[in-house]
Every structure is written in structure tokens, then in C-alpha cells.
Image: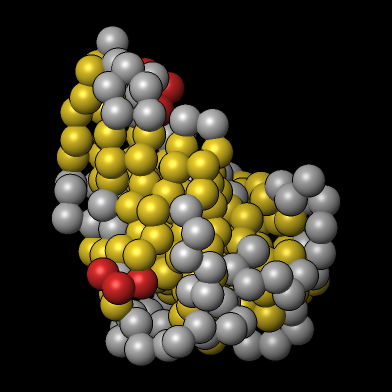
Length: 116
Length: 115
């Protein structure tokens, strides 16, 4: 159990367009979902934390108007990169927290975004 | 402030050698959790272990073992008799507080096991 999927696994888009990435917990309800960003050969940086039905909490330095997060249900969170630019090209990873066990996060396979 | 340091950027070992990946952390919280994750070339993070700050017992799981020492704020990871399939990037992470909601990752150590 505890499978998290992401769609798409990779996407190429043109500068100025918007891209939506979905994160789903397939076999459990996620009280909280997290979005991370990973640049090549670098660590994961937390972008935002979202709880179902409420606004996401963004980390310092992350533009909330650029990275729109919607957590519409206990199994789905979406990240929309609006007006994407080449510097937004990165590996985006979501994770979902199951239950209240400390740190019990399950990670999705990631989405590689390339903005041309 | 929370910080995780993995000083070893890249390590190469020959198959069957033992290898230790270092992790040093900083936090002011008295309750916190430490993690190790494996990220193979496919990109998906694989959970390896979680340890809370009150449990300093070392743990062994097959070829993997972990040494947690609060006195030196370290949580090192040893792979015994390494195999090619162990080649990956390994991340150490810290989650402060009892709720352990946020994960702070180290910069990762890329391990290459040479056949």
C-alpha cells in the first residue's frame, strides 16, 4: 500500500504557457500533500504544503501566484506552473502524508518539466 | 534553523565493499525525526528508515545499518557488501518537531558501485 502517482511523468512546454501536474494517492487518503522541486544533481526543496480543502502554505521564496496548488480531495493535489519560463524547468516531486504518524510521507515518481 | 549536511557528494566503491554515508544535522528541537531515502536513476524516492530523536539504538536491516549518535548530531548509513543495484543518490532528511510534517533534505550522496 501507500502508492503515490504523478501525471505526467514528463512534459515539454513552450515559454509562457501553463502546465498542470497531478499528484494522486492511489490507495490511501492523504491528509497533507507536499510539493518539492529538485534541480539536476541537487537536493529536494520543499515548495509548499497543502491540506485538503484549504489554501496551501508556501515556503519562503516560492511565488504562490506562479505555482498554483489545489488540493481538491483527500487523494488529489495539483500543481500548476503558470506562464512557465525556462528557469522553471526542473523535476517536481509530490509526496502524500498518510495518517498522523510522524514523517510518514510517500513520494510520487516525479514529473520532469522542460520549458523551451 | 534546520540543516542537514551530507559532506560526501560522490562515492565510488567496488562491488562487495562496505561503504558508509555520512549525515550530520542541526536542529534546536528536542523532538525530531531523521530519515534516509534512496533515489535510483528512475527518480522515485524510496524510503529506507525513520528514526526519532529519543531512540538512539542502532538499526540493522539486511545489508543496511544505521548509526545514530545525538552527541555528534550524526545519523550515518552503512551498506555492507555493496551491490551494483545500490548505485543511487542517497538523501538524509530531518523533520523537526513532534508532528514531523516538513522534511529538510541534505544535498545527497551519489553512490556508484562498480562491478
